[in-house]
Image (tube, rainbow, N blue to C red; front, side, top):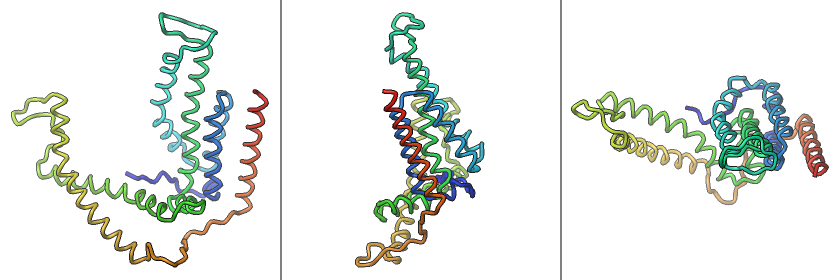
Length: 270
């Protein structure tokens, strides 16, 4: 398990300043939430894919995002006309179920909006390492303690998952049944009893992981104190220094121009 979604690479998005990528993500999120035009959201979705592909992000990772969002998209597209029977141009009606041109268009808008919002976030997550991600947030005003907390949490999520797997394997080797499908006589249990038994069987594993986490937290706390955490009257320095380059200013200018053009087009259509 890896909590880091970063895809190593040297594309133009990878080299861009994380603060610029934050702006691109925020702008796309806001525009996709404000616009209710399916063609505009589809264009944003296409642009997001072109940005990732030209940066060198593997198609496998892009497909992984679609795999995650597929169920949500299908549910929204199918259920939206059912719970939103509004509209005057009725295409088909059966009892209380009514399909109109308006609610079908909104279903398409919502079905496109979900992946557009998701890929707007993955533009930054796929192309920004955890260290630069946290450094970009602290440079924008996040307190360094909050950034340190976030970085530590992201760092130790896969560590604790690995500990959980190791303890589970050790307990299985000692004969612990984590499935709870059968009782001592070999008969199958019902679903509720099986869930209760599985929870009970995982208790010793959870306790062992919590004890290990407590010991690790002590070590991490001592390491932070030895490096001057909470030391008063000192000026903090950072290993990673962010500096805007010419390419970053160009990307920033294109983003601002595209945002202004989108706002003008929205106001013109009102």
